[in-house]
Image 1 (cartoon, one colour):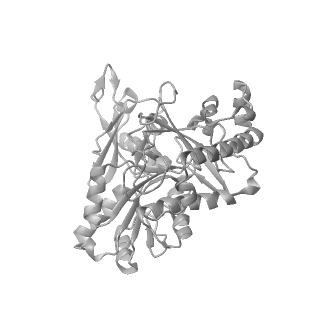
Image 2 (cartoon, rainbow, N blue to C red):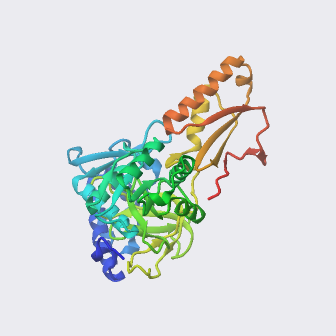
Image 3 (cartoon, rainbow, N blue to C red):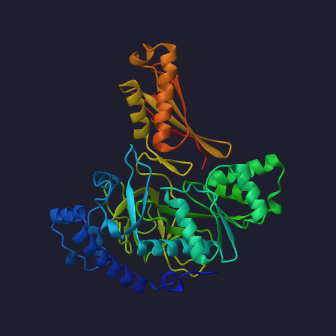
Length: 433
């Protein structure tokens, strides 16, 4: 099996831990010196960088959460001056304010290298033509895979999202061998091919690199059968680096976390207690090589478990299982993070008051759909029919502007949404993962 970086991907555990400790100590020194937020946090806890003498001392350090990043919007968490930041990306925000992430020139080089690792692990080589069907922009997915593919020496087709028939035409004419997209979009492509009478066996596709949303083994089999390729999973998040935190090798038995660049922990989401290997809990990541935007014990909100047993591919890196849900209420829909609070804010702004609502997520065909159901309140009921329609349109426009996702919004009678102990079930996720 191909390995991109033999030195770091196949290290003995004691050598790896020594490297992690050295890089952790350097990172702690950097954030203590350059990031006011971390310096204050450390001071509150009575911690100085010299207190971190072993990896077990990591637990002395505070967690970082999304709220900390929002409070320090836009550049408060940067550890280098803006003149050293060569790229800025951001995540989708729960309101109009996203989380802003900076990269130094060296961060971009490291990021490209990390992505090249999981692409190589999936079987990508310099002979491949990689079609990227992620959105190019502030979202990290497209650029991450783009630069990783170029680092390998593969040819990149920066197609972007949508325009499904053109995507298929390019696959046919350009002889695309690797597809990069969300898993649900891969199924949408397969469905359109079937409608167009195109046999996927006539394409040159060999490998699919899918991420940006949770997906199951059943979905993997569907994609592999319908597109005649090998489908692999990878994991990343904008706040930590983007894609490149972890990825599957061809054994497809968990995603290898690149531990020379990140220290993973699994914690109990309620207590924050670190759990033993194999236990299911919330993934926490500490960056070891990031210059512009280092993260100390970042709570990802993703539920998973870690497997330290040897992998047949020869890599000695720990593997994380597919994420098994969230410790918070975030939904991942078509690769976009959506929070109920975004929906609530849209309803509140349009109605000028709170209104009971429910979010229903379904997989209609290959794509996820988002339906928002709002109970009629006195304020909404008193509106004329035309104004009710205008209210629904305003809610819809607000949600689309914040999330970028098209939604269906409708009204139902008061008290008609199902309740448990007088509480509405806020999110109903009907997707069969």
